[in-house]
Image 1 (cartoon, each protein chain N blue to C red):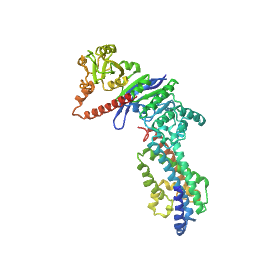
Image 2: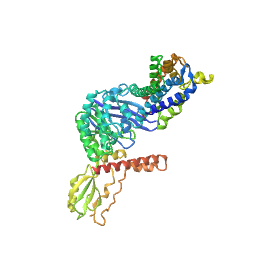
Image 3: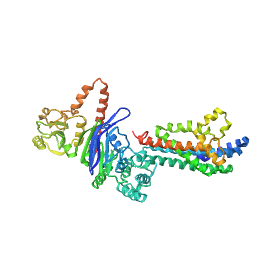
Image 4: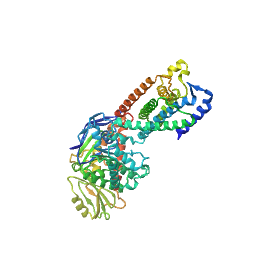
Length: 228
Length: 379
């Protein structure tokens, strides 16, 4: 329910009220332009939040020990939590997409790109949430990253604007933000236009998945945050 | 076959605390094994390492021949662990907890349902299967953890203080249950502070103190090492004459109660003869403390249990025993018996940093002794 209310407010305020005054962006209405970004934002937030709260909750309640004592391999434990985060992120993304359809018409240019981008993004942030939860020792530490790192990076990752509107130095800074590549690839799937090279975006997402998954399994093997 | 084998197992925590200092331990298949020790001795650390909840610093652990270094998953499959503290998701239903646990061990759902029904019935929790676990009583939560540990039918069941904080009735029924599953072939390792529990259930015992095994033998062999026992005799009325018991240490908490310390070379017949001569009529008799408790305290306090000599106060004090009178009911006030180890520790550690640690340690031991004593008297 909270993601539904948030998305609806975004579409009303940025799409209908402010968007009407902004005019066209790359040949599309402002609402059509930001819709992929808003969908992606909800996927990122929920994939991350689901894993970080589930895993930290299991640590806090000590029922993570059920898994650690069992013969489940560590990669499977990581995969289980990531699958849960992905499922939540994708379901919320689907709901936000349905809400977007009440406000605008969404044209899909490259369906495969849309699916691949949203899947990879949800995996990346589910894994990121896992790393956060592994290191977190209290509730403050699981809210710190989403509040002070994830949200600013998402807002500055081209959800509401094209980085071509920024000065050159700001464009260079934006290109260091991995969320820009995910939002751009996803938007390319819908609109057929992107701020960055789509192939490069997918390379970054794939690399992030591999590195983060290996890191998560390594942390579990080592017992960081889970074993004394 | 050995159910569990530990070799030179060491654990040093990041804060520098050396919890285990090279433990060697073997538990045979089918055994009912007690692992005892004071708080902080290293019991839970050892169990944590075996169950993969604590990383070892060095040494080897094998469970039914599977090393936790090279065949961790096979070793874990043989294990069922009942931890000291509640560690299931308290927002889930009883049935969900058990079915999920079965899933972690790859048990198909229909089989898991059958086993769930069996174990919940065995542990008298079947009626509670749809209850959110948070709302169960303390005893039920303990039983739920036992059911969870047994759902995959492990060959080795490790219970870390399973009866802590449960009432006598639940404790007794839990003992009966554990005896039954041990008879059915499950090897059981039990840590407990209720030494009566260990003495009643276990065939082998290891005592761990300050990260080292200080005793490891058959329960009967270990108990034979106990040189003295204190018997409490309840008399029908005050003694009419003088009680003469040379060589025995006798105290009188009140006019109708006597406490007599008897070592291996002495016998109870002499006591009864002396009491009869003094006009005493014994209506009941019991051990002052649990035998294992007495032995345990002597071992962890560093007192000699195998020398063949009485280890407490000199016997010379108990020659002739005056008749207790109402006004002088306690002629020899009960004092804590001198303990060789504690005396030397007190003097050597005075005015040093070590005295703080040793003081804390003594406090822990006193707490443990109180706990053990109260549990013995309660049961």
